[in-house]
Length: 287
Image 1 (tube, rainbow, N blue to C red):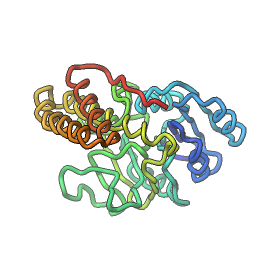
Image 2: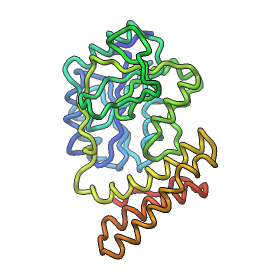
Image 3: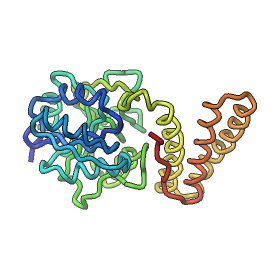
């Protein structure tokens, strides 16, 4: 099967995203198939979006994390391709045309992504700093950021997508690494540009609590990722200096009465510590 708008479903996970989700939907091609997993249990958002847009299905649930919510959306897709995007991602007018064009020329991929227009913050990683192909319009990469990734479901014969042990962060790196180990291709389409606002997918009203949650989960996920792929000892070696630094900074900000920074570093410590002792990723933002 080939990529086309009729054979593609956009999967968008929202969390307190009422302020931005319309902008995201309206920049997509008209009459796109869209599945939204609403992770903040907002029934009013479901009613509003399903009344306003055609070919949209909004699933309302308690916050299950990015990996789990993305999996639910992908498995609900009736198309061969699922395009995972964050609510704060904006498409250019020709983004999908360029992706479809590249897909027709290089259809052997498991994951394809547009390129970020923020050249100083590339949305991909290449371990070997060399050109891996002769086509100037695409890059053969090791991983792409999770805020915009097109998944070719035909390359997932086991129907296993994101590792749901990750609540937030590195679930995309884990997926990409697993596919590369299976000798699957991951491409960046250099002419298909997107704009990622970054950190704007949730309302700023909840910014402080989201920041605490991010720090907890970043550290939890980092240790779990390294343990999963490289073993417990290497994960411990990589993470132990951060554990000590987090405690030192916690006591420093405690002494200087900086409540915000104090909580940031205790969250980092606790996220890392919980992962190190094998506890599941249990922390949830208090919103």
